[in-house]
Length: 468
Ligand SMILES: *Cc1c(COP(=O)(O)O)cnc(C)c1O
Image (cartoon, rainbow, N blue to C red; front, top):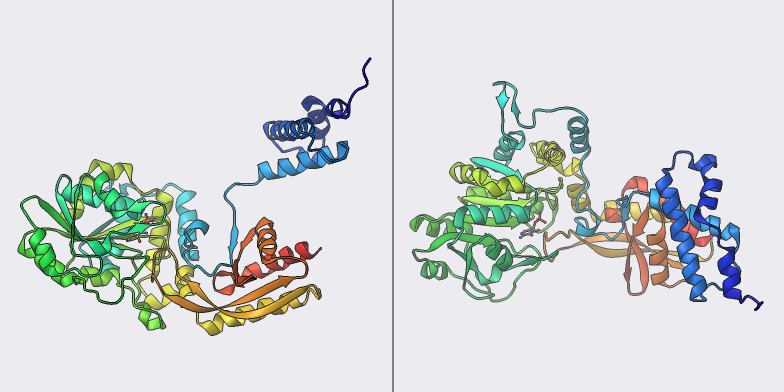
């Protein structure tokens, strides 16, 4: 008989799935773990070992302890939800990849109430018959924005598509060349236009568009004049664009509807908080725009939603569009949106209660104080390998809002002996919950503007682990 080589020896050592399952199933810890999860984890780890052995990647001997420890880790990974809490220490308040907006407590309470009970979602309690899904938010939308009518769909991209399709399918839509934006995640005005069956008619130039450009482009096949808020860039220098009242005037003269995609959309005048003024929804309604669309989860600070406000007659038509059913808003979102919108009745209250607004309007001093506190708590780890520094940095609102604005912020810079900024970033990200910071000039920094007060202990734990 030929002597077995090391590879064969190792392969023989691999136990069968059933044998491991028997051992692990009787453990108290896994009494409530579904069998399918145990089997998947065991299979995965055994397969991995087999392939490591075959590719001679297994550096040392195979021990049953190591195998079991890998399996336990895999079970834990499978059992963890995929969508989970993350700590945003990037300073980008409306961070699309990290979930954009945190809901206000009032909005969460409304979601809980509606999610766990039957509701009048599409039922008119007074009349005892079928009602409209949009009634939950229509009145409050009109109250805050001053519009005649309003409705909501899945997100703003859907709102734009739906409005274009309803008002101008098969017709030309006139847009300034300076406003043909692309929003991250492949929302591009020309593409949405094509998808809604409209024909894009570009006017003006990248930096300058005049009222005469719209006038000249209007013909018998024109269906709509569209203004798009350039949410994620600004054009500076020798520029000109057509104001809302001017657009409304041209629309009226030619009996054409005028629509605005506000993108972020806010009800708050940020200039009152020392920030750049963003055009508000009220501005657009007051200027006489027929239809205005905006997001629920950007500067508004609510759930993902596409809000449409404007003239009653047009909103009626949009409601009747079969696409509306395909793009309709879910009841949990509707509950969260109502809970958020109600806070806007008192703008000062909104700024206090809606986390997105609070984080954007927090002063530098407030954020600096948080940075001081965090640094203080971390000092108490008394580890000479940890070097902390306080940094004055800039946060961004993000989410295609207040485009080029940097808000002065404060951060804690973290250096650890024998670790690069990249490896600190990686280790913080590997923590559970993951902590997402940023790196500037080779320094790992936590921007405190977006870190919540109750998250300090998580950051301390993560650093403790890293130093251990
Ligand atoms: C963000 C944005 C959109 C897309 O809104 P979602 O709610 O993310 O679908 C559309 N238009 C503009 C101008 C935007 O800024």
